[in-house]
Length: 305
Image 1 (cartoon, rainbow, N blue to C red):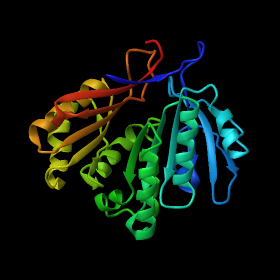
Image 2: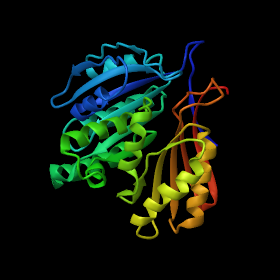
Image 3: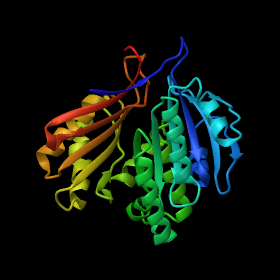
Image 4: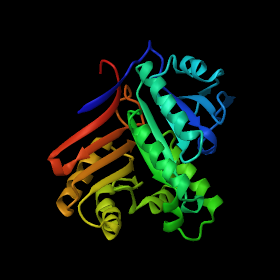
């Protein structure tokens, strides 16, 4: 098992700094539950950023204000006392991609893992913006520890009755979901919106699994994926579970290997509960390449465990 080790400092709970980047990131941050406090800062031209700190040990929405100005020095100071950095942004504009890349590099300087959760533009936003978003995604992939891309347009295609504003609101909640539990009300819509969509050779799926997760995955998720699957390639799944993420993701990867001809499978899983309270509850990311006959888990844990 591969691990992202978090440097737990003293006896305090593990904490992650959530940074919203650009206008899209600000909208995503607004979708988070609880009394989140964001500090709007401005630095270089066309670069604006919000920053807030969130305790992820119990996901109880307790936040701390950090004044982060000027931009880079303030953000470096804001990272002090945290164990990981989560960057959220919408790509394709002038600010989001540059900001996420900067945040990821600053996190690396501070020896902190950075997980980037980013949105790709709607088709109606034009080919230029979508091209710029892909360029930004490639740059972020070279800087962040883990990058999770979400395709905005897929929710319009999956739920045609949505207008753009409703679709944006739903996507903001989806993108923010790795940071805070979106709750029971959002799970069904989340899974419906994300099942079976394809982006740059990767399928992204969101699903809230209960006790019968295996049957539901096999009967619902896989059938939707393979309805759109066009043959060999890479497949990516993003799965929320209420039990053991590692076991769930391993079984999903094995089932896909058995039933498909994909070259490589990556499974990102997030557990809503874990018996080991020393771990960061609700933030688990697993990757499995089933066609290579091995399973690799990326587990965020405190140092020394």
